[in-house]
Image 1 (cartoon, rainbow, N blue to C red):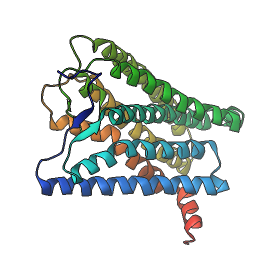
Image 2: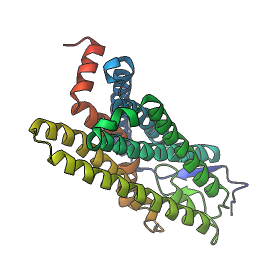
Image 3: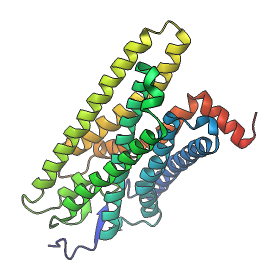
Length: 306
């Protein structure tokens, strides 16, 4: 049986063996990818080139757009290329790179979403201290901390996973290299160390998720005390979409990594993987650009439209 010293490639799960359905898969993923690409690039450009949006909230949103561009570029292009070339293979090095960069982006994404929740909490619940607490230096440090935590998270899991011996074949039951599916290919009980690290990481993520929920409970309590209906609407329109994205991301990701893996691939595994790895990067620009008058105005100024 192949082991990690002789393994040269893995085989990824295709969405279908029928050529017409493969083309449909490519077209659907292409539309999703281009929409995420254009949406996140527009947000990045609007914030970067409009000084009116040089505020902490939009600074973090610009970082989120960069992360979303990276995360969706890790999985979708390879899946489309395999369908077009009617192949399932990904090199060993390519699989390592895919795991590393996806976990790096997902870890940074969640850290930044937590920072954004904290930013909204300070802005709404402690408005008099907002400028002092969220000054430019603090914002840069929080954003840098999000990126660094993503790197550390990725190095830990990628190194731990590929230090294991693979002897259960090379068929990965997912359309990208996903750690739970890779662990099915490892020998004996050697995978238990990574399982332990995954459980610890998910518990840590859920802890931060509780922090986000508590922050939003405090925000909503403060918002409901605002006498102005316009103020309430503005606060809710900012916070509720953010909470929706965080909840979707955490719940589907935790389900994917904590659910016992089955011996055969299932449609549920594919759907959950799409929900946590593909959907958030396309939802973020839709939610934030469609519901933000400031970004809409910036985009109009950027494109010269009135």
